[in-house]
Length: 416
Ligand SMILES: Cc1cc2nc3c(=O)[nH]c(=O)nc-3n(C[C@H](O)[C@H](O)[C@H](O)COP(=O)(O)OP(=O)(O)OC[C@H]3O[C@@H](n4cnc5c(N)ncnc54)[C@H](O)[C@@H]3O)c2cc1C
Image 1 (spheres, rainbow, N blue to C red):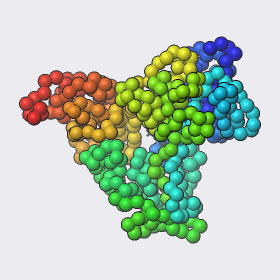
Image 2 (cartoon, rainbow, N blue to C red; image 1 turned 30 degrees about the horizontal axis):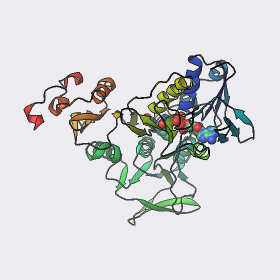
Image 3 (tube, protein in one colour; image 1 turned 90 degrees about the vertical axis):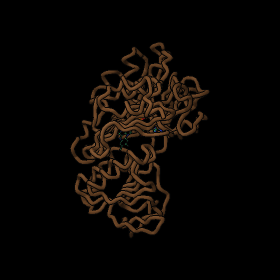
């Protein structure tokens, strides 16, 4: 691209910031804008449900780059700036101020927003969501004054926030329709570890039920479930998933299905010159042969730079395995791969002691792996998934056999 080119990144979160950094690192010397509606420069969200929420990390530790980075790299960072629309035909976008900006390449990194619960009482004071730093500040301030917090949703954000709020010594009830926190991703065996973890730390679990509404007079006082339970609480956090922020893309006529549909170079299907990365994207994955919408930190961290390289014409497919991590109390974990369904789960280590590696197997091949309180094994776990070889479950479960030696001849016992 010539020095006259203008590249615009819409969405100043992790994916956008890493894309801007990469464009400059890879030699792009045209005009580069990073436009974001939030009032501050790009920051990381994972601490918002963990150390930052607990007051153990400060604002500055969240930033993707420290102050001065954007100016030093001639990146025009425009905070507090909402992009209203894109005209893909005219290669132009319009800001809320009415200003129009032409571009040669456009990257959408608009992220996701918390899914709202359209239920009676959902707009009462004291009902919170958690996505931005402002949300975390509001939740922390409300938690400081609250006695009993009800967390609605047993996914990652609900589970992590419940843990942090317990660590802050609040009374916490965790409500969800499933049999255990995180069971949809992990299955009952491994999710049971999280159910017991929360119970052991004094979280009251109200499982197998959905929320029907919220009660209170101006302020929330209780959560009511569909099966008639009333759970009193003076603060509610709703964490029931996120919805990709595809509104700009949809209005511009880009293909959207659970995210902006992009090819393996992260370029929008049928819209040359427009790319998407991070939580907003649903990217064609060469390994899985389908569009994957991944709402995790590592995906934003790596897709931003991959999109940047492709904007420069490098034609690099994005083929990383999905990966995420979570920290709850003293249990840290990393999960690699994708297990939509599986035949069996093999555990190396001790679920009860919360120190193990779990493997999800389909047709005797490892499709996903999770290490819990065991570290530095992501590479071998991912190698097993990428390799796609049949594995011997007995060897996989045996902690004395190195992970790179679990393939090969199946033993008679495990082959049966
Ligand atoms: C509380 C919390 C905890 C998490 N913990 C973990 C974890 O432990 N592990 C893990 O793997 N992942 C975790 N995640 C997920 C991870 O943070 C996200 O996957 C990551 O932030 C996605 O980055 P992104 O750049 O795609 O989107 P975002 O970080 O959401 O950035 C998108 C930005 O675009 C802006 N924007 C949207 N529309 C417009 C517009 N029209 N004009 C201008 N700006 C716009 C938004 O305001 C936002 O600032 C967590 C997320 C949250 C919220």
